[in-house]
Image 1 (cartoon, helix red, strand yellow):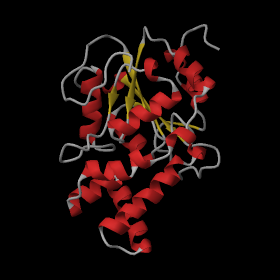
Image 2: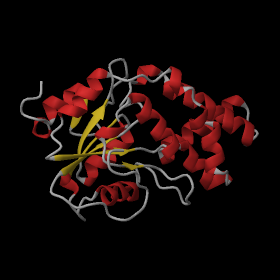
Image 3: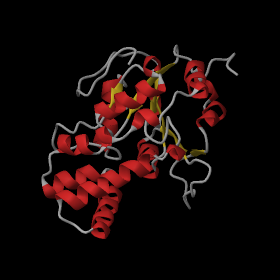
Image 4: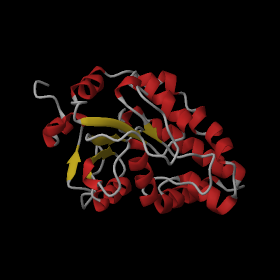
Length: 243
């Protein structure tokens, strides 16, 4: 990151800028890259192997934990006492990202056009720091962000989106003053995460790519199909001369 990587509960530097939180996976790169599918397969393999489940039962339990907790690993830690860091090594760290994720000129231009005198850019992910660093490095966008809040697999209990504690943690680390929910902007591809952010008072955009079935009820006030639409819905965050 340009300024800091942090996963502590201490406050970051205070200033008057709003903070724009960006999710990473299936957000800064497209869902069509199929990273999620590869990850889901590795998670199913992990469930089947370490819990001695049939493939169908592994897939079912994986889905159940994801829906209940927002993160499959949280269910594994809560109910099966698995080692989160070992899980990470066999799932996230095992993904062949180098051959899948490539830099995007349009993404770089979008981030460059955000007015840094008004906006602090911050990464906000349920992944562990290893995976987050890999993705951001491959996208070549490390220097656009001032920090990152991630799910720390080395601590228990795990705290992850959409838990309110995770949102509060992100605000504290990004230097948002206590109770200043309206100072936070957010984009994520997760319905649950966007719904919670909206409820908490963050200005939220749910990214639903073309080809993805849209929810019957919007998760948040804004729903977009591409990150480029952020220019239209949040014009106040961009430089006046940005195209």
